[in-house]
Image 1 (cartoon, rainbow, N blue to C red):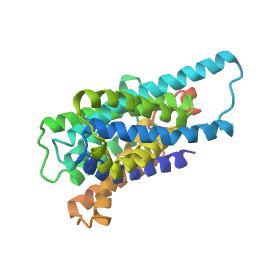
Image 2: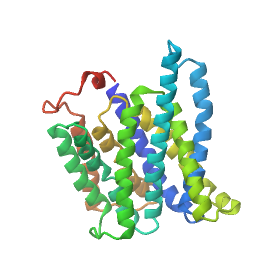
Image 3: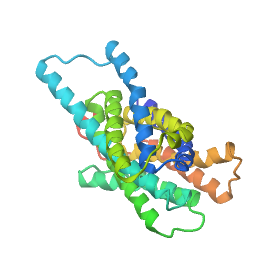
Image 4: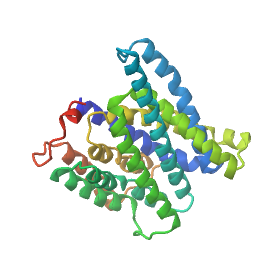
Amino acid sequence: MKLRNSLLLLLTATIWGVAFVAQSIGMDHVGPLTFLFARSVIAGIMLLPVVAVLRKNGAAPPPRTAAEGRRARRTLWLGGLCCGAALCAASICQQVGLLYTTVGKSGFLTACYILIVPLFGLLFGRRCGKLVWCGVALAIVGLYLLCLTDGLHIGWGDAITFCCAILFAVHILVIDHFAPRTDGVAMSCIQFFVCAAIAGVGMLLFEQPTLAAVLAAWKPILYAGALSSGVGYTLQIIGQKGVDPTVASLIMSLESVVSVLAGWLILKQAMSGRELLGCALMFAAIVLVQLPDRTAPRRKEGIEQR
């Protein structure tokens, strides 16, 4: 189960890494809020029939009592609202940050959630073993070598993007809380419509979207909506079940490696020795955190049974 979920998170990172290009191209035609609104609507609509089919086939056991059913629905909607709000805030910061900073800095600063997640975990009494902390350190160094070729100079766009990393860390921890307790696909569907509603209000207030501009960006919007959002974030929710959030964040941070490899394979962009070393350190970090760690504190029984 743990290996399967780790592979799902790796697939998520692959989809996100390739989607980085779509996000940049899409904003050549529409504003960040319009782009986020459109991709979220597509993702939510795409998941509606999936949710219907899963419920029809009895993917989840029906509640035994009416009270249990009400609690399940309340948990589902609360999870969807919290995940959607966190995802919307994080995505807005990432999209706006891309307008003012380089792709390399954005990739590095966004992936800093791999350090923020375990730090947040300490606030809730969730400690990590030595291997996980070593993996985090290796990944940070790898990301620096991979994404930052001209050094780190913090500007306005960088600050916004770092806020994005904090918010994505919150999103990961919110999923870690709700995913074992409810239907992951249904919660993902709700989170996209919540995200679309919030982004839509901002779009109408701060941007002037036109149908022509949206149609001009239909390819990147469709990819970001159907694959990056609809498939990617749903796989994240399913894959995080039973996986420590720090380990999950490390696996998903491979999106930075995938984006560089995609540029090399698809766009024929050469990779330097520095970038190759960064990729190697990132992969080493992921392998390291998958090893049995006797120094890791045991989680509570209720969490271990997820």
